[in-house]
Amino acid sequence: MSGLKGFGLVALIGMMSLASAMQAQEPALNIQAPATAPILEAEPVTPAVVPVVQEPAPVVVKPAPAPVATNGPVHHVAPVVVHTATNVPAHVATNAVVMPVTPVAVAPVSVAVSPTNEVAIPENDRFFVDTWQHPSFQVGTRMMQVSLSDTTRGTPGNGSYFGTITEITEVQDHSPDKVYLQARLPHTPLWLGVSYDHVTARTMDDGDGDGVADMSGSDGNEEIKGFIPYLQAVWDNKTRFTPYAEVGYAFYQAKFLPNSWGNNGQRYVDATSSVNGFELGGGLGVRLYKNLSADFYARSMTVDDITGDWYYNYGRNYGGPFVMTMSYVAYGAGLSCRF
Image (tube, rainbow, N blue to C red):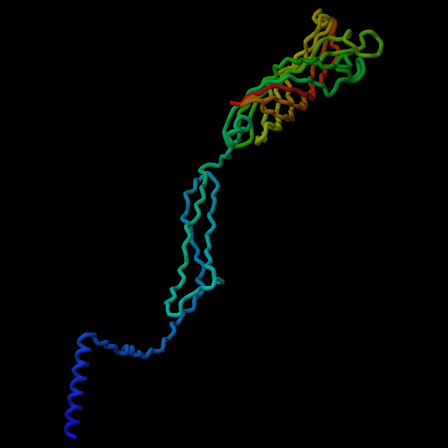
């Protein structure tokens, strides 16, 4: 019995030695269970209070007053009103602070104010357009076709022009010598001018007895010549065509020019030497090149009657009154230049 105990003890010691030797040859695996992360107790998140976005009041920006010339029109700048949009949804994180919307100030719109009231004319039109803001001068001349308003009067010795002269007719002069000069009143469409005028009428009677007035019974010509101061209104525009109208008052010198029969002293006329006339006229200027224009013109002239006396038999006998009516209408054309 004691022998078995001793054998068992020896066997136990041997097994322990074998285990120690095996442990020395192979490293022991030390595997431990992973440590469990501590569980943190989460605190409840309180949602941030989102402030209510109110629509800001409109911001009125008053522009700085622009310098305005005293002689030009004033252009006021309207205030600019800025409205912020209110119908756009705002996406905001629940834990973020929402900033209030700041109104944006807009710079005032500047408006250029011209120091003068001049009209801007395109460069291409400057050859054909003359603006009425600038004083200028104009000179021109015309040829005219004249038509007398009254060409018959009475019967021989009874209400005639004088003696047997019962009819007069125009003596046409188509020479371009009806010159005129005018100047513009500053900053207006009005012109002041003066023109030269002359008209001639030939006397006629029934020289051959056929009942028709003819040249064979003429005693001579009546002539008026003088100057017509006038006021003219012009409509300048952005075309080649410039219409105008005028009113004037004429100062004429009247003279009877006897023919060879009258020069022999058979008849002698003593007539008024100065008469006046009232003019209404108008026309159209057509710009040709730069300041050169063609001029189309019409005039109605009311002339005072020329009165006097006539004598016959070499001036020894009184023949009666002398009356000559020289009112007329005329049409003409010419050229003019502004400078």
